[in-house]
Length: 472
Image 1 (tube, rainbow, N blue to C red):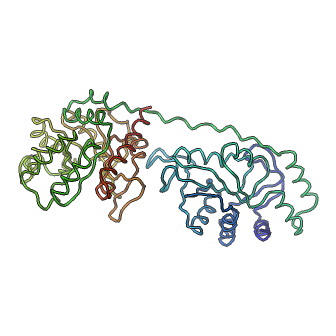
Image 2: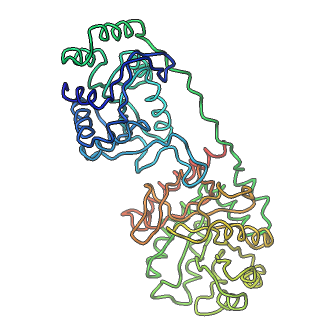
Image 3: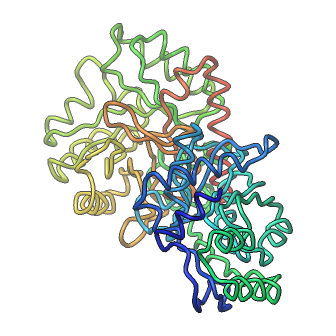
């Protein structure tokens, strides 16, 4: 302990003079632990000392450093202890994931907050608020230095127990004993602490509540011109589900089995008929029978991309006859609006619907910006056939979104991340609440589960709760 304090003094991280603190008061002593990032050995010692400060009774699943000074300390703590770390964004951006807390975590996990020092406890509370809002529990905070000015008491009032490596008075006493500060300086700091024993937490402004623009699905159903789009909204409202399962399996038997198991939980089943190794002409009728039994729609993820005349034949003919059994299909707009005209020629008379690929969930996708804007324009011009979009972050689209269109987002799992082939995953809550989508498309998280029906139910509840929250 003494060695650490002396090293901090040697690098001028401990200063004496007249300094204004975040709490608004003037202090004769200032501790700047940001300097420690330039001294790896010292930073490592600090993190190890903080680990040792925690009592065996402290329980935590993840750690979070208060931005910004404590971030490198928390990182060292995470690496040395093997504890996962999450990060709080001090400024939440209006693009990308739009999240205040970054990292992989689950609701109800316990998060330990790490800070460099505590005066009133305001910084710790500012970090605890978004962590708790994200579903994490916060019961403990650990700091290197307790300035003994009410932080411990203020945190306790908010359900957080403070653990400190050293108190400010102890720190000054060590520096005095080692001849680093004068008796006069020690007395000045002691008097300051006696006169400022309880610094109130500054009033924290609540972040502006996110504007809610989402209308209930049943209301949006009345805005839709296309019968399939209208029916999909109605199914979502009736079954209380915004879950689509991506049944990307290799055999018809597997696909039909998955469809029957997850059918009660879904509003839509997504297929890739061209990966089936044993397709037969009666596949469509068998799948439609299951869809009618469980009241869900069939979405063939064909991703048409050719000229209008060609896609007309691909849609209606070939060996798959997609038009006959799929309620919905989708298309790229790379070939221009003619592709929609071609599909519409055959699809509209049967009341079918079309999703346009406006964005994709794969890393490095070119479907963004002007491409997305062009997809929206084509959809608006063909709203009697186009029912919505395959999208990733409609909340970020310039000009907002038309509530008559349905947004379906792939790449959804319970944890954030990606796979080796560039697929990027986001959680049901982030997709629905933060990104403004309507339908979560889940593949491997359900079809690879030991119990697909149970997994589907879990995803359905997560997606539906996020929808209800975004309607408030």
